[in-house]
Image (spheres, one colour):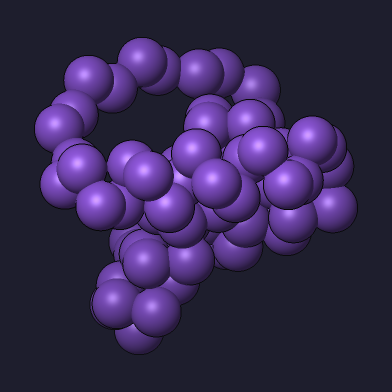
Length: 71
């Protein structure tokens, strides 16, 4: 991941509590890493990789996802 962009978002309190619990038991992960993994997986599963200009985006999302998992 070469560049980072900050995103401010609101999430349901229940999701926040689950995230906090996860992070407390997985010290190698942080909030930014979880969000990067979740967002890249969502885009991989729901993106349109068939369009020519989208295939580069698909590969970039796959790279971010794998780098995040194996950080």
